[in-house]
Image (cartoon, rainbow, N blue to C red):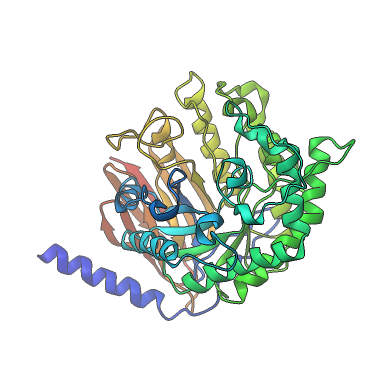
Length: 461
């Protein structure tokens, strides 16, 4: 009982130390070529670590039924505090202008589970190969226009279906037809209006892996840059405006085409919104086809070099919305996960792995809830929210030591830094005018003197 009272008292102290700050969160200023930071409503610097949560199999009355409270309980128990939740326009608006209240309630129930376990959620308007008109999920069939062009399914290589003429033309109509533009914006207003007050919602991913139509004579990188510049940028401006008509505070996540995975810089322009997050995906074509990681190919290095150009130019944070190979048990995959985690830690404000499910394939864990081979390397100690300016943060997986250095906020800023810890025994020390305020299994809070230079060390027991 004493422990319960002590934990409750510490919780109340944390709340009191955060509550006075009411400044609107904006990307934190950084110097040189450093990435701007993602921030919360208190102005603390956020790091997101988590997984995609999805139900692609069920639709209609059964939509989202595969997602349960267990997903969020297990995410938090493994040390993750972030989920990218896939939702589908075809389930939300099965007929033009008729929005499913049942579907909205199901989304809200999932968000309530996330809030219960203190998991931040990115609501992702997902599409694969445009939508159900082509046997997938996403844009409703009633909003799919192909001009009668052909479509041939490729069940053994579904991504190649993006290059079918009918699919490419459907994207063009979505970007260019005024009535479809309005319909897509209305869909986002409905979502933002419904969930703008929900405490679990961090932001909105406006469309998953957008593609487009290649023109005669264009190679794929040239087409991707044109589509991003001329079609995706104005679309994101429209959809951001739609979100802001209902929600002024959430972050808006924008994706390039998946071609960035080949180390091709994006052609996206500036999005006219104060809270934009650049949200590329981190996939390699060979590894997606089942090949092993080739360290000598330099793919991670070329990807990092290309993908950081946009956020440096437009001063926006980066969160990788999907990553993780299909076959994670091949000989070089242990090295891949270690090198990928190091890379993501250099330039992102976080990531969502693909995907939190219980089984084989892309699943993070097996049927018993244990990490599948090498997936355990994604579970590291990290600072979920830092009350100040981060100087450095890194985890040495070999030594089992996480070190965080930061300059604590001033007297008017937040004072509590939150740490997330994966399963296991961890020792936490705080120096430089700071102390460990609260330490529960999997979580810790650090209280710092305003303006202090703080060093936190987390060591595996």
